[in-house]
Amino acid sequence: MKRLSVLFVLLFLVQFTAVAEVSKITVNVDQAKLDKGELQTRITELKTTAGAVKKRVIGIVVIDAPPAKVWKILEDWEAMPAFVPGLEYYKVMHRITRDDLLIEGVVKAGLMKILYTLRVKFDRARLTQEWSFISPEEIKAYNDKGIPLKMPAWNIKNVEGFEYIEPYGGGSRTLYYYAPVIEARGVPEWIERLLAKQGLEGYMKGVKKRAEGK
Image (cartoon, rainbow, N blue to C red; front, side):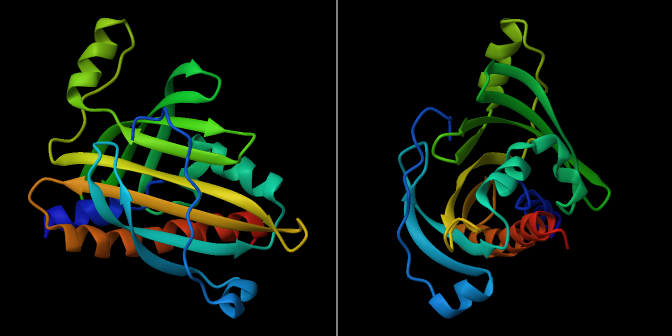
């Protein structure tokens, strides 16, 4: 149960080694629910950074705010603890480039605190983001280069994902897609998907409320 609690909290993270463009996805949605601003989730097969095909939970929602306002929220990772449940902090540890960052995070799971580092890449022209887990081997390599990163929690195998936004309703509203993946040692894949769905809903609703000023 402790492992499941850790996964549940981690899946509120926002958000593979960030080097490729985010591929836009096509999923069937209920148009009426979409127009009402109701969050919808779907399961589709997508490749991970390791090249494996995994069933991934996708979230889609319309936000009653223009894309520029939503993007400002999504790119400010250090402000996310204000609306992401269980997130203690995000801190930019190193800037590879202006749009390619190493970000350390800590989430709380009961009395436990789980530390990890992500590589996050922003594409401001296409309004996309993608993120990947920095492995212990990569942490050592960065440390050798003089970039001080901390080792991640022992049971976290992989955290990756992407998100992007598009104008909707003539540009006065925003269509938001979010697709997280988390893998932990000793946890079945179907449980990972179940928890991903629960974590996704909390995160996306938090972003939506923040952007809409609710």
